[in-house]
Amino acid sequence: MTTRFLRPPLTALAVSLSMLGSGLTLAAEEMDHSAMGHGSMPMDHSKMNHGSAKEPMETMDHSQMGQSHEKAPTMDHSKMGHGAMQGQMEGMDHSKMNHGSAEAPRTTSRTPIPVLTDADREAAFPPLPGHKVHDSAINSFFLLDQLEYQDADEGSTLAWDASGWIGGDINRLWLRSEGERTNGVTEDAELQALYGRSIGPWWDVVAGVRQDFKPESPQTWAAFGIQGMALYAFEAEATAFVGENGQTAARLEGEYDILLTNRLILQPTAEVNFYGKNDPERGIGSGLANAEVGLRLRYEIIRQFAPYIGVSWSRSFGNTADLMRDEGEDVEEALLVAGIRMWF
Image 1 (spheres, one colour):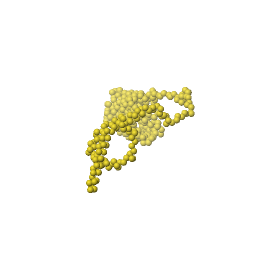
Image 2 (image 1 turned 90 degrees about the vertical axis):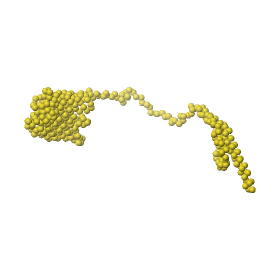
Image 3 (image 1 turned 135 degrees about the vertical axis):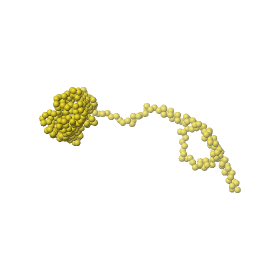
């Protein structure tokens, strides 16, 4: 009896819920979204009973809803009130807005601005002199690289090696001289006068004449070559000579300064001479004639004046050595030297 009386009310409740779901679907299809005013629908979500809606949703028959969301008409957003808001923004008069209210107040300096006269400007900014053109000036330099005493087998010897120039930065007249005197007698002496022209920051080409005074009778040579500083420290000279009687010669020279301290300097030197043909009168043979190397230690009391001590070694080669042996002279010699080096 109890089951029979309870079943009809449950059946009636299911039918009512099904009809309610169908009614909601039809209402959603017929709803006109264009008439919805988003601004006039203040919804209080706090008063919505989410729990009461959950129970009938669980008993709804979704198979009869027929996916009604596909049948929903297209929403017309132009009627949702955005156009009116945009019109209000465009109608605003920005020219009446007070943007300057946030700016800092302007202050006026109480210090008067001085008025400069021409005399004041000349005193503050005097006219500057023009720059000097260095290549137009005439300068000079003289270096007595070696003036030394040598203790040779034949007796005491005074030797010298000097060079100098006069001119500008590009064109110069160069003078070179070297020789030696033994026991008061000049055994070897020469003088060179060369025109030099700069071809770079460190190198010059030279051309001119060389005059030999000793040994034997004087002889004149035409000279040309190159000189400069290799590797920013090694001073080098390479000169070729052509004599009066078709004699040819070449000379290579070099020296290098090694700074042991700011004033104590070690200087190695080297010189090599070549000749094109034999000259028995002067004791010169063809080919490599002789070579000389030295090592000198100097102390610069001032930059322009420095005493030094050292050693020098020389040797003759080839035909020149044979001619010296025939004269009974030594082909090799080592000497102790002492001298001064100065420039101005």
